[in-house]
Length: 359
Image 1 (cartoon, rainbow, N blue to C red):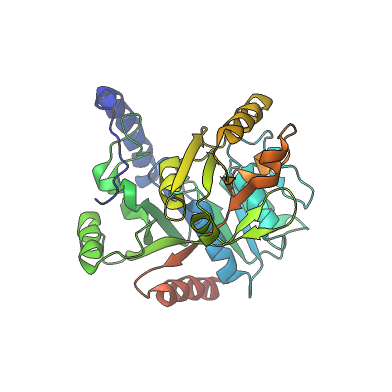
Image 2 (cartoon, helix red, strand yellow):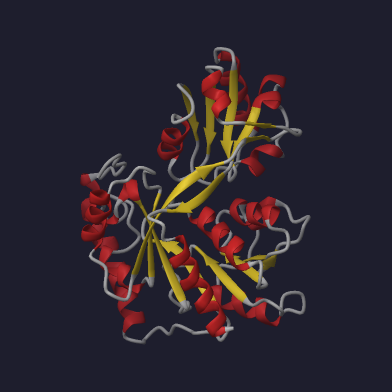
């Protein structure tokens, strides 16, 4: 596959075999009804993956919010990965990022009219959203990263697959990045192959379609990223992406995400000179990291800018100690998705029809 980012640690394959035994046993308990899965009267749409991290869940959740929130009261329910709280938390306008996690905070910041809640127990979270006086007018619930959370049966189960990390070529954790076997893609109603090249050929589409070998009831879509203007993190102001290449800017790319290689590739479409500074996924930046970023920025040739992701922005914005070079030149790289092959209308209709039918 073009731009393949899969790396298999073959020496860990025996541990992957053990991991697979545990994953298969858990799925067997649900498949045989020993563990039960609950169906709700309210429309529930799950967005998740089989690969650990980095398939673009948040931009696709935001796509669904834009699609549905015009006519429906939408709630997003996440587990709030790496949050510093427990139990059910309903986000308020002043809820700190640490209490709900970076991705739910990002969604609440961009869509204040949407209910955003976190709960590791998705059943409990759904039932709280439906019964709480503050949220009982909710009409559709989007489950973030819930493909493996089988205690809930969503009305539509959307499986995201990274074009650069095709599940058919990967291995189970820890040798690879698969959370469960590829055969479990059978639970998906929709499959979206994400981060596709915009100039993908008809042959490329067919290769992916044949590799996935989906069932007749499963709809297949392809998406790519589209980018807006860079936005200043500190203060007001925007910069067109074309300005980077026009002015031959050097970019310090600061990320704490699951797939920094893909982000670096995306930035190189606009910048000739990119220096990556990568941290672990959902990394909580420290004063030591601030110093590292400051030093790296001072070493960069001029003209230069520092670029980070929407996901990392809230964790950076609250930090103290950035020097004037960083504060004056730190920009956020906004990302949205676009459905390819002129199938956006088809996807939208399937989602909207389901919600209308089950409201």
